[in-house]
Amino acid sequence: MSRGAEAHPERLYPEVAAAGGLVAAMYEAAGRCACDIGSWSPTPAGVVSETARGFVTVGLAADKRLFRLGTGIPDYAWAIGATDDLGLLVEAVAAWRQGVSFDALRARFEFLDLDELTGALDNGEPARTQWSHLLSSDFYRPQWNLLRRLHSDEALRGFFPVLSHSAVRLRADPLDAVSRQVKVAEADAGRYEVLRVGAPEAAWVEVPAADLVACVRAFLAER
Image 1 (cartoon, rainbow, N blue to C red):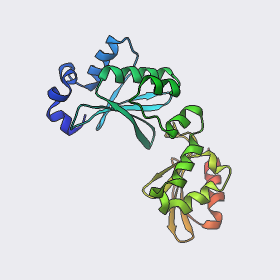
Image 2: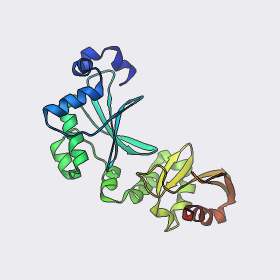
Image 3: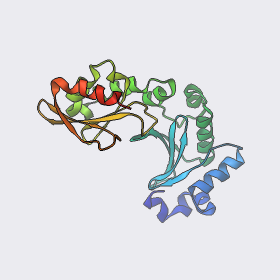
Image 4: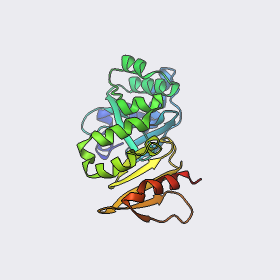
């Protein structure tokens, strides 16, 4: 729950205040519609639950009554819709957990905005979609040179890329935060730093551009 919502929960979210919290209110709503919404844990921005389609989050808007629904994978999250109807929200969460197709979800819950990446996670092609997004968005233009070097290799294109603090992280399994992964950052013109994330005594290794792909492939091949 946001700080603003906590200041006046009775006015915007009376059922949340009466239940003693967002999770309790969601369980009560799920009970009324006989929905299975799984287990939930608190976060600074709301509550979260793990599902086979990645994690799902629910938060409260501060300035008006809105239950905000989001999804994501480790290190990467995005919004997928918002509604003022808590009952409708928990029904959508239950359908998501049950594996209802995205086309059916869109048809049944008009408040959902299931983008291309969300669908790609469901159909097993998240890496291809994410590469396309990063390489076409002007927001990531400063990292295009690095992204293109990595994307040029057929093997590396199969890893899921995440951009954070100007570094690219390639992960074998987008849904597993501890799966094989390598972090790459541009050190200066023509040189790159590579880190085997999670490896014992891992340290940054600096390599020239010509050796970047071979180094990243070697690190990702290690178990």
